[in-house]
Length: 335
Length: 288
Image 1: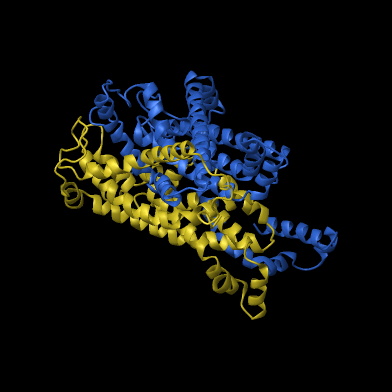
Image 2: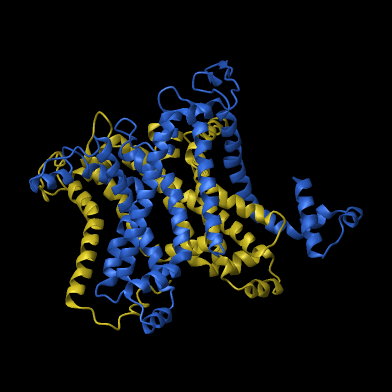
């Protein structure tokens, strides 16, 4: 630890002093101590986070990557039953788990659904959120009333919302089927069929996620200077052109952030799927994250397989984030 | 951002046609109805008698009573779960705010070796899926004897909540002029004293948001709580409630009543702080 910080401080000091040579540093006593006396406040203040995150994320991550290269399951990890210590017997299998996963149809099936789920949710969140934000941005009677009522789904804790909707979608006692029947249509077994179950989980996630988008985009709309609209109007721009060339570019900083955050959240949206359908019927609504969880904690717990799924998910997200950042940078975004 | 209602109608010079008005209000009313309906239905169902939820007819009222509420509070482990949830959420909140504030302040004000590293750490941690961490974390907790302990759960929640909160706090601190810190230092305060006595009180809105965010993270978390808290009396609400609507037995009366009990306080607090929350979220994210 001391060595790395010492080296880092030397380079940064070197930069600050305008090319103070490394040789000179070594001869003067105690660069580490001097760095410590100058920076200890900053280090002390960040230490709790670095330590907690490092221990509870860094170590499990390293361990998870290691497990993903073994064949560890519940049956062969070491454990202690009473006084008997059973040693671990799992072995290193290299990339075997990854090969198994990537060559299985199951993975691609789940990935397709996860991507579909993410794209559908984010598209609907953004589209509906933007529509509502633009309506609320106008001069309007009862505006603040609408606003508060429309935000309400966001205020409901996620797991509560999941339970509410599970009841609404209940095929025997759910109000949605009761309404369908009252309208003379047949009941639908919402959570019993793969296709309708998918529609149901997307509906719930859209219901929960739209308010956040709406409020964030409303903030973005209010940050666009009114002069731009006036200038566009003077130049004879149609409403569509104003939307296309003033509103959308003006929203870009906010949009890019919320879409990226939303994508991450939706991609990893564990509680909705887990609480509403448990991934069912069958495994039709299982997204990558819930599937990895199922591998690890149901049946014979497949720790290594689950860890490999986790590494793949993380890899996908990292790739996604960096592609996204690069795309933004190409458009001249300073993010 | 702060004046969502007052910044109104910069474009309201044109009078809207009556048809346009109807369309606008119609759409908004429909959206409002959709956003309200599930919550309203939850409330109505919870007020029905014991087996009132077992009805395939569309009935709005059915002998309203508080029977489900008394059952939840007296016959189930709901009070215990509530206590566990509150404890976990409050501890996460207190520790989370303190840790996020100090870190946020340090990366906002000081240029120190490792500065970039800390920023990246905070950013990257937000991307981690539960799936990869949960098994090793479970083993780690088991070894440290932290399974079925609120403390273990709180520590796990901190890793989820703090990186994001530190970002939010940092971007808020960035908006407070550095001259204020310098004035404090000249008056003889230590850097930590400056932070604690001067800057933190100025950042009160941001602290409120961070506190709320930490609280909600812990309050609504499902995966860690399901795995780490296996003992009946250690469960949190998000885990315990699943029991009311299990595979073999379900009682939506109990579930709806407890859902109302959980949702109403959360919704009230939320509506009070949501304005700051959005400002914090978007500014925290755009100023990377």
